[in-house]
Image (cartoon, rainbow, N blue to C red; front, side, top):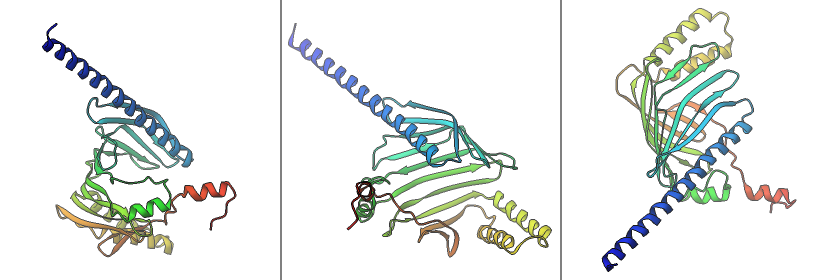
Length: 280
């Protein structure tokens, strides 16, 4: 056998080993990702006892390129039902890498005593922080990460429903402030808000019809909703800046909502308490 043939056979053999090795690593890693999705789903079901997750199916595809994990199922509570035919996540699932999440078949949200709403388009493209330690890493690790000024970057979010008249694109970033609370800036561009215009008319009519029987708290609640919706107009291509700071969400000077202070888990203190060790 000539030297050229021997070298050719050696190259082919090495290529075969590389292909087999890559395939093995890809499918092994993919199975770990798939299992992680199932574990997170189970944890969600255990922590949220009033939420039932049914008809679940998880599949893996994408070989030999990025992993594509598809989740389908129904999320039910006493007051709502979300039917998701397919929710796809495409990525290498590594810190610092982008993740593309989409619902190619849309999804349907049914609220109690209300007609179902079809979400025609949902897609989210985000880039993970390179050294994010994980939400269960503890306050010390999160504090150290916060000093690095890293962000979860929202490259693009698209949400649209022709049924209700709603269409928006969004981009921005999320991070943690010095108190380890969510912070960030998000730019929102509305392409269609006929739903918001309709809701403003409905709330106004509701007050006119029920003002005599409404309590003060009921009136305040509806007026607060009207004030929030009044921040939007029916003009096309509207752009707004949403700011998240001090455990609140703002649009301009208007506070849209306030969320509770987040107490992150602290594995060290939990282990110390379990062993009967007092914190210094």
